[in-house]
Structure formats: structure tokens, C-alpha cells
Amino acid sequence: MSVVEVKHLYKTYQLGKMELPVLKDFNMSVQQGEYISIMGPSGSGKSTLLNILGCLDRPTSGEYLLNDREVTTLEDDSLSRIRGAEIGFVFQSYNLIAQLNVIENIEVPMVYQGYTEKASKERAIELAEKVGLGDRIKHKPFELSGGQQQRVAIARALANDPLFILADEPTGNLDSKSGREILDLLNGLHDAGKTMIMITHDKATAECTQKTIHLLDGKIERIDENRGVA
Image (cartoon, rainbow, N blue to C red):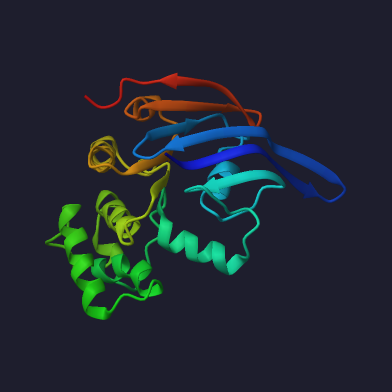
């Protein structure tokens, strides 16, 4: 079953009187439980594709089927609900709320989905322990290393048990040891059945996924089948 399917996707930005085409007749699908990476040089369309897949932006034309539901024509409120309930985001810069501790940061998506205070706290503690931060639950972001902050971000992404995880350069701000630990954590989520889409510039990171989609000038240049994680 396809979790994500885009058909004949175009995205053009209007810059004054000039049109800048970014995605051009783009087609791809991601099956349930699949783990894919997306690579490409600057300007190839990676960020634009990520924003569309994450329901943060709309294509100029084409279809985006999320769990067999067309979402490109939905109103902003509906897209917001989908983002909160069905997509887990992991960003390069973590995007944690500085004033909140680990548990409170993890709880944020659940608050918007109407969890009770007791239920959200219990799940947040469970997820903090799952990502190896059970002894850091009262710490705020500035008291954590980069790798620990990214673990919080991953736990937050899992809060509402999303259809898929969308990770944008999740190891990009980390040293090699922390990056490896975060990658191991993401790989473990896939092993447990989670559908994963990861944007990365790092070839070794991409090779841990099942396949790599290479973008060039808004189109798929090629798709590499990877051996994945042993």
C-alpha cells in the first residue's frame, strides 16, 4: 500500500515577472514500511519536495495522495490537522522550544491533538525513555547536547504515531559519533515498521536506506537500490 504517491507534480515560483520552475512532472511513491532517502545538489528541488510532502506547501499542479487521499486541494485547516496527526517531522536544527523541558517539548503535538494532560505526559515519558533520554526529562534544550536535542525531536515526531517520518538532514548538525547514534535510532524505527523519508547530502547515510532517489533540476535523475542496514 502506498503511503505517499505524487503524480505529475509541478512547482513553479513566481519571482516578480519571472517564473522559476522547481519541480517538473515529478512522480514518486513510497510504500508502507519503506525507508527511502532523497539526494541532490542545491537547487535540485529537495526542499520544495519536502515542503509538499509535509503539507507545508502546495504544488502548482499535479496530485499528492497521502494514504490514498488527495490533499493538494484541502483547505489550510485540514492540511494543518494532517501535519499534526499523520506526519512526524525531524529537522536538522531540531526546532525545539527553548522554554520547555524534554517532556514538554515531546508533549506539544499531543496537546494539539486533544490528548489529556495525563495521557500526553505518560506517552512523552515513554518516548523519552525509548530514545534514551529517560534521565533527562526535566532538562531544557540548552542543557542538552546536539545529539540529545535531536533525540527529543525524534520522540516528538513519534508522539502521534504518524503515518511516516519526514527527516530533513537529521544528522547534518552533529559530529560523526552523535550522527551515527541518531542514524542508528532512525534505522531502528524503520526496523520496527515505521515508514521513513529522509533528505540527506551524505552518501553513507543514504546507503543505510532501502533506496535513494537522486534529484537533478526538479526531476528524478536515477534511483539506487541500497543494501540498507545489515
